[in-house]
Image (tube, rainbow, N blue to C red):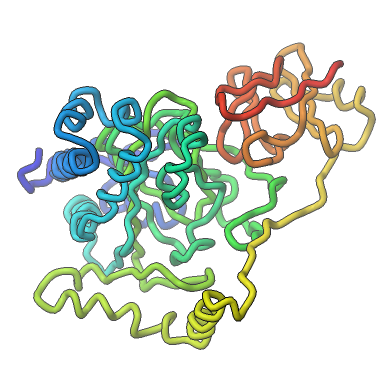
Length: 408
């Protein structure tokens, strides 16, 4: 349905599948619930328009024949059809579309779908996420030219650690299949808890609690509060994950990160002859008219002129935590599916009757596997869900090493 009308929209809690009245959705998301709107892009008349724009971007980056193959085989297989450079150019082309195309997604969802019109604000910079399989993104230098989060995985974060306001509501629109192994992670146990961080990084041994993984069909919309700790799954599948993400705030944006901040526009100001002028308003009031922002702009100029040292955001570091007691005691005390640190370099994990001793830190970005979890006989990294076979220490990405397995 792409005739501008709104079809039957439903909302379900992702954790329990319960139906949720549409008028309650935004309030419950603001309070921390994660909600999915199945096939909402089709119901709101948005899916085909954005898919056609995607094919136009493919044509501009490559050829009509390539666009036809993407249409026939599915956007999930774009990495088999386009070269790495063409994938980058397609992403850049989509990201360069007039913002009104993406604002329309937010407005149709919030106003027409959920019936909310009370002076909300829309993020000025939507993100097109084309997450190709990790082995491709890790070995092709051209794919690293895009901002992290478009093609390469983000580490665990809250949106307000970046230049976004607190309590922004993410509108995460699946344009292709999203499955476990190429999706996103939310850590519900960390909701409202204080997490020490520096820049955009938390400590590598920070406990994260349970994880939520997501499987979505094309056209599904996932809604979640950006103050949830969340991360990107390392794509270990043979499919590209294509998602368009934007954010809204239900109140005037409040920022905590260092500038420059991403502007948010009041939705009511986005139409009419004076709309371009109205969009300047975020720059003509706090937080931009502050000493903090002026100092930032002056510092940025001085750093470009090499008159001031460049800032470095070092990760938070804490002392590695190891279990007390001997290695034999640790092994004997382990429950099925339990992970425990032996010392600064090793962990023990029990799967059934077998206890494996492995190197402690993930081969991808060094996250502490003592904070990971076990599922279906595999050990999972808490940061990006990279899975390891405890019996061998091996993981599925050819471009990464494997965990060392210590002799028993």
